Amino acid sequence: MPCLNMSDPPSHPQEKLPDPLVDVAARCVSCGLCLPRCPTYRKTLNEADSPRGRIVLMQGVLEQRIPANERFLAHIDLCLACRACESVCPNNVEYGRLINGVRGVVEKTRQRSLWQLMGRRVLMDGVATKPAMLRLVGGVLRTCQAMLGQAGWLMRSPLAQIATRLPRLRPQPIWKAIYPAAGKERGEVGLFLGCVARVLDVETLTASIFVLNRLGYTVHVPSRQGCCGAMHAGLGEPEKVSEFEEQNLRAFAGMNLEAVISTATGCGAALKNYPQDFAGRVKDISEFLGEAEGWESAEIEPLAEKLVVHEPCLMRNVLHCQGKPYDLLHRIPGAEVVPLAGNDQCCGAAGTYFLTQPEMAASLLADKIEAVKASGAQILATSNIGCAMHLAAGLKASGIELEVVHPITLLARQMGFQNDKN
Ligand code: SF4
Ligand code: SF4
Image (cartoon, rainbow, N blue to C red; front, side):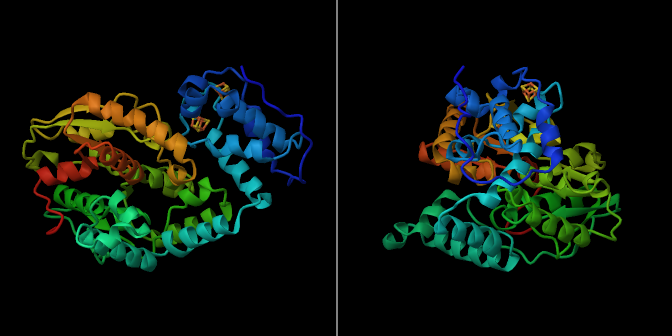
C-alpha cells in the first residue's frame, strides 16, 4: 500500500476547524470496505486517492498535524464527491459532509491564480446563479448552434467549442407561475428549475410538467427560486449555499405542495440538505411519478428500441431511488430497458469536475463509452443533465450516434409531448 507522506511541517497556519468535522472523520474505523467502490482509487491504486486515505489526510489537517499543502490538495481535489464510499460504509461515516466541510475551510487559505478566482466569480456568481444572465448566455449559445456549419470562422471560437458539446438548446420559455392539471386535480406540486437545467435542459422540465399535468397534478413554478447551491458546496463555499437555501425556502413557502420535484439528481441531492420540512418533500421526478396516481388513463405509444440506463451517482448514493427511472421506462410498451454496465462508478462529470480534473474525468468517461457500445442500445437514458452532457460529448467524440435523454422526456414523447408545441 503506498504511504501517505505526512512528514512536512505545516506550510501556513490552518484555521481551527469546527469540532463536528473532527467527529465525522473519527467515525472511520479504517476497515477499507469502501475502497473497491471508489472510482479514483480503482484508477490510481493509491491509498491517498481512496476514501480511507483521504479521511486520514483530512484528519491530519483538522488536527493540524499536517499542512494543507499542494500534495494534500491534489488528493482532495481528485475526489469526485460521488459518495459511493458513504453508501457502503458500515460505520455511517458522512463522507460528503466531511469533504465539503474540509474543502470550505482550506479554500479560505488556498492560493489560487487570478484567472481561477475570476473564472469562479464570473461563472458561479455572474452567470450560473443569475437567471437573466443564464437566459442571455443560453440565447447566445443557441444562436451559435444554429450558425454552426454556416460560418467557418465561428467553428474556431471558444463559444463554438462549448456549443458543439451541448445538447440541442431549446428556446427558453417564460415560465408561468402555475401549470394547471388536465382534468380533475389530484394534487399540487412545485417544480425546481435549477440554474443550469433551466437553460440546457428545457425539454426535461417541460416534459415533466406535461406528464404531471396529464396525470392530474397542478405544477407551481415559483419565479423567485434560485440555484440549489450544489456547485458552491462542492467548491467549499458554505456561506453561498446558505444564501441559496434561504432564497429557495422563501420561494416555495406558503404553498400547499405535496412535493417539490427535481429533474436533475445533482440539484435533488443538494435540496435534501435543506431543513427537514422542505427536504422531506423533495422528490426526483421518477420517484414522484413512481408513486403517483392516474396512470390507468394514460395512453403511452409503444417504442421498439433498446434503452440503456445510466444511474447518476447521487441518485444511487444520496437519493437512493436509482430503480425509479427503470419503473418509468418500463411503462413504455415494447421498450427493452437494461442497466449500463458499471453503474456503480461515476461517469466523471461530477459538477465542475470534468473541467477541473479533465484526465480522470476522461478516463472514467472512456469506461462508460465502452459500456454503452457493448450494450447495443439505441438510446441512453440518464436523470442528470451534467451526466447527460458529459456522456453525449464522449459519444460524439467517439463517433457514436446515440441520443442521450432524460427518462421523463422519453416517456412524455410516447404520451404525445412535442417540445416545440407543449
Ligand atoms: S467503509 Fe467507512 S469505516 Fe470503513 S474505511 Fe471506508 S469510510 Fe472508513
Ligand atoms: S466520494 Fe467518490 S471519489 Fe471521493 S472518496 Fe468517496 S468514492 Fe472515492
